[in-house]
Amino acid sequence: MQEPERRKVSLAGLGLISAGAVLGLALAGPATAPDDAAAGPPAATAPADPPAPPKAPS
Image (tube, rainbow, N blue to C red; front, side):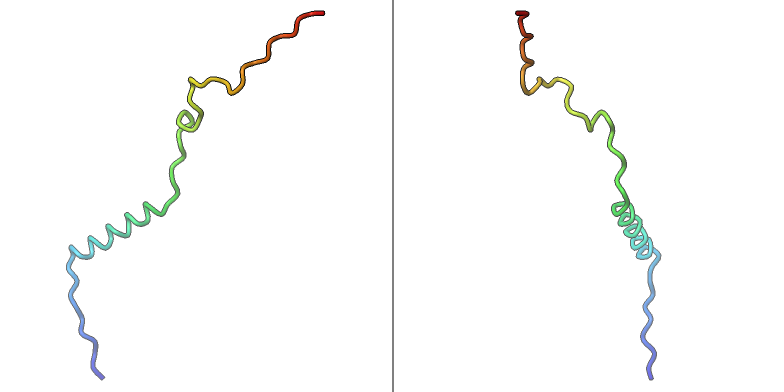
């Protein structure tokens, strides 16, 4: 039975493989929490309906 031929792996190749693994883990991880100011509605918005006028005393 013949043994399989072994190939030499360069250190540059191992570095690229490990860099890809680190990048993949970083992208697969949970996202950071968004800022509270960015999550809220814009500050300069008008109300959807104008307030009702007060009732006159009878």
